[in-house]
Length: 175
Picture (spheres, one colour):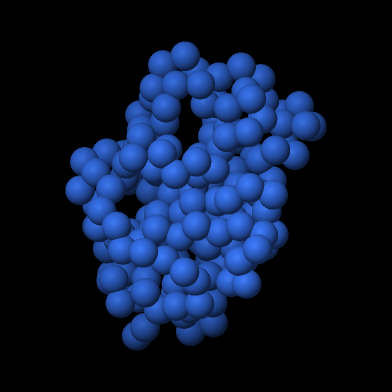
């Protein structure tokens, strides 16, 4: 059974909405300060690093939340969102687990078909880099600043890392 493209695009849309909303979350005063040391986190059973100066935003936390695609395939999403005190930078990690079905590069390329992407390796992870802005016709939503997403497969799961600065992607991914 193949993955439902709509279900995976929904994951991309969630990530983009969260990144685009990061500045407004600061304006509403949800966060202050930031951790002074880098921290290691685990999302969906996969370890990531969060750079110093970022604080978790609990509004964007998901832990094994079940959804179903229109083809009847259940999937589970886990996510964490971090923002800095400057009100300018955000990092989000989302892992989609499709149980017995393994995500492949072919599935990721199918999902990203309407978007401009480039194959890239970051810290030993082969994946796909997508940069979106309000001027992109394939953008999931209009944003005031570019959003960078790196999408790859790990342990059969689909991993999305989103950031407001491309350099954060290398900080987050653990070799």
